[in-house]
Image (cartoon, rainbow over all chains, first blue to last red; front, side, top):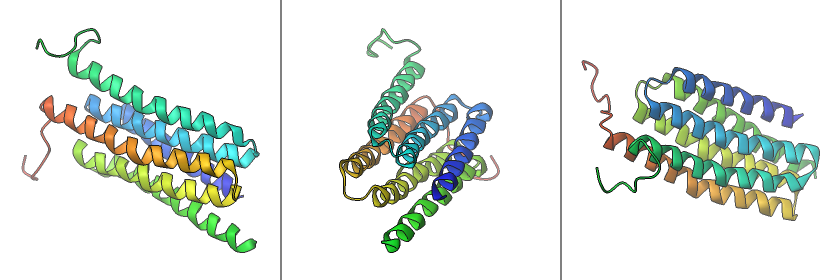
Length: 91
Length: 102
């Protein structure tokens, strides 16, 4: 029973984050909202893994947390320098 | 045995409340830099409450060890991502709204 409450709360948080991602005035608000949604997805996978008893799904949540960080930093690098192939010195 | 159940329910419930509080906070705060704080709350504290609650549910197994690993990683990675975000925003000239009459 508590897992349905937890899942519902996480889904509400994700929808609020997505709403902020759509409305966000600056691009950094959008990256921030995507970062938050990514973290909540990690929690959603973890809650579902424990809910359904399949505990090997927790590795998926861990991998997703790793990828989320790399994704956010990659998008930041792209936003800051406009492209991926310069190494940032010649600006 | 029911005692551990109640404690994990309390942890999961506070995690859910913190998540929703962070979600509302990301909408109510006026400025990007204050929204960083709202997301920071949801990232570390809400995830921590959830994961401790889930660890109590799965008991003393490898699964709870993996959950604690997730929490340790989130505990270090989310502030780093938030810092990189604030740094890039500040470098690109996004001014913080300091006073009302701006």
